[in-house]
Length: 146
Image 1 (cartoon, rainbow, N blue to C red):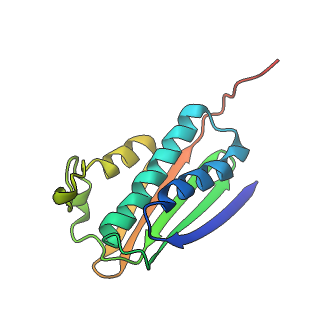
Image 2: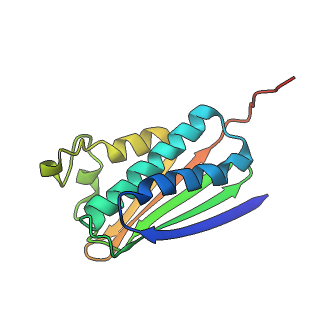
């Protein structure tokens, strides 16, 4: 069965928690393991935070967009902004790279996303925004309760 949902919300840091919980709630219908749920919440948090801090420079009058598609046991998540874009995607995906060192950012966002998801594609253009497409195949074995 295929199911989809879309969200749009203001680019304020308080909405990162909302996004994380909304996506987690949506995917529970696939009965993910606790580890899978935690990983997905983490990648949503990282990508949304990147949009807010790097894409929009913490300016609250913009929107962050999330689309989720559930198909069988696979999750597709797209997190998109219409911000400043990424000049060099390969550099941005390097561990410890950050465009905001003054904010003491760790530069591990994309590394975490890539480690927790099965596939990650980043599409970006200067002054047009960034889209992060992620997929994850959930495990087939579930806990059986007696």
